Image: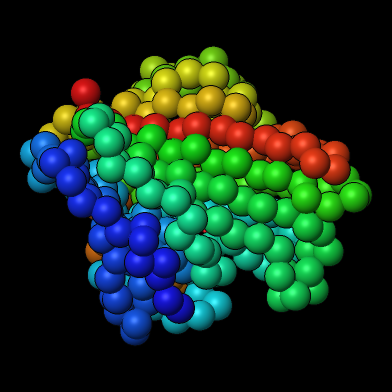
Length: 294
Ligand SMILES: O=P(O)(O)OC[C@H]1O[C@H](O)[C@H](O)[C@@H](O)[C@@H]1O
């Protein structure tokens, strides 16, 4: 994989630089003059770290993440597309296991960003026979990470998709973490036979495996509070929010997660699954998802 070197930039506002990482996996580093940075692999357009200007990494990456073709990276922000969860395609679709192109970069006052592109290929057509483009922009705006995810139908037939930005947030300790902002929303509880319940509490707390899809929950800001502070997560267009932590038993079956690391993260995901998105020929969908410390 070779980068378009013209997309590397550096000026008084920050920089975008291009590197080779583990097993030769290329990655892009974004840096702002104030000291925020991010590391994004072309494989999966996978954001692996986001450090703010105080040096706090907002994202969890597994110490045992496997850098090999066909395997999703554990941690950071995997992109699930065109299918969230199990279904006709492999779990969570193919975008997280595909190599994207770096398509555009910006280093300007107030924003350092990179845009990644994934298009249909012979490989994707075997499992998803449609023409599409995914444009994924990752922006550092001060101490906020903002993402813009755009899906375009480039073909002559309509297609349907579901998907997610499956973010793993660092937490000091999962058993003293709470997720706030989802009171009153209906959720599908994947650990209770996908039954539906209404969220009654202000705080979602963690005492065992928790795997829930909050339907239309992305209409609210969600806060993740741990002993060290609060992460604010905001959404537009994305409808649903998944909250997930595997706890000890399920984590034991995940070979790409380090010993005890399930205690160090919670997933709060921007999801589109309760309504399948149908895109007519030439139609696009875009959603934003952003996070920062309060
Ligand atoms: O192990 P993965 O394929 O990456 O999936 C990890 C998790 O993703 C989502 O959060 C789902 O709700 C979970 O049921 C699933 O276990």
